[in-house]
Length: 283
Length: 315
Image 1 (spheres, rainbow over the protein chains, first blue to last red):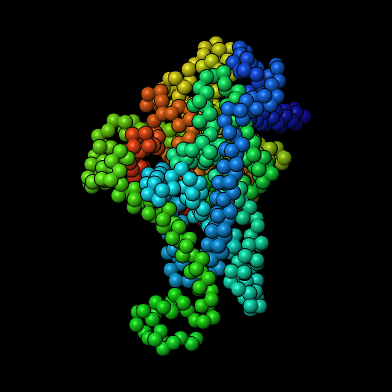
Image 2: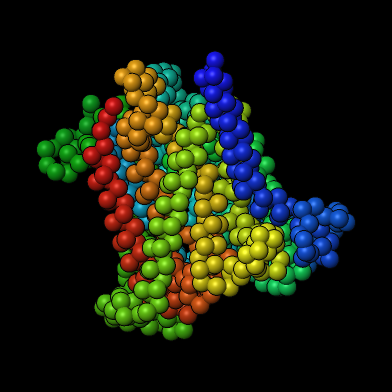
């Protein structure tokens, strides 16, 4: 009898410990983001208070957001970020699906060597390519243009690997049947293989978009004109223009505007994100 | 198989020609393969292979933005400079400490968390994973700004809590130890979700029969964990350590925004130093030399990974 009670007690303690852990985890992981959003709704007078306010006393509504938009061309930054991310995502989808299809379904000269060579390029760290890219785009006269930011992000070796893994599961009969029916090779790829690959292409798309949206170092190095800046570069510019602590509510409003779309995409396409991470790591 | 007689020859050119184009049945396919693949391969040659050669080339020259037309070859001068440069060694030491702290923490906390979450039922596991993943997708610049604000000596709620506990306000970003801890905290917070998801993926690959067999053989939960789960997670460990190391060695945003390498040189890492040399002092040669050293280190880490992975066993 007492042992049963003891067991029940241990079980209860376990459940309780689980709840506490879950609660702690939620607090630690969510608090910085919560603080960002809350601060963005605080009037300037409540940004620095003792004790800090978990919730604004005077809800500032969208006033801070309006103020940010008054000071810097946020809409323009948004448009630039979207344009660059869309171009890079479409480019990545096209190149990776095409190369992935070819490496999965065709036999050709030096296939193994080429594939291994392609995978080896994943080991090239971005910090090494900075100076060469800079010199390359400078020589081409393309510094401070969209080209410099878009072109280096049009393909990824890990994306090709990801697509190839998936396409190997597509039955060969499907492709030969189309071939016998007289379907051209490019049409087979575009109209038969691509639609079957939606799951893996959606994984690739969310990652390409996220990487482009959050990309910071390279755009910061090459983009100078205010009209071309992306959101992360724009935020740094904004913060450097307004260094005072009291303006933190504005910086947080800017940050919220930048983080919101990508978080929404993540919540809508969670499965793709988690799958993509599980398959390739982050790159 | 109707080749023109010129291509029928058994000379090297004929063989190569046939390897490349094949029979007429496959000719259309080969045309498609090479027409599609060559531009893509050229792209990778230009944006992955060429930069490595170019970085090496620049690192062997005196290459200043201020002198746009003369880049004299100076041999290993830039490397010799790096080896004698105090800041290079400070940055290398900081990078090493940062990497060890980050990877060690994520490896341990991620594992503990994953093992606990793995036993949770849905939807709780899903909710916890989602929450841990939010910082991963959030822009690095934005979350670094948030941390800068959170940790501020006057602005931050964290310092309020410390003061409340009688530990006084602590200038996290103004002291060496504080800045280092802050940078590690930010990177750990931001990347925990990746480690968690990969650990969970690794745990699901362990066949349940093995755990059942261990239980039947009378192994306690702890024994089963230490003797079955941990060894079977070895590929996951290897992958995570290498991915984490290579990733964090290249971390730029968190450091640049949160501390900018400071105070002094307390959080100056190699990547930050590359950035400073190449894009603040406009010394491309020195910047490239440091970057190339970093590349060799990353390459070595990756090769060690391949070595270890090759010894992994099947189950």
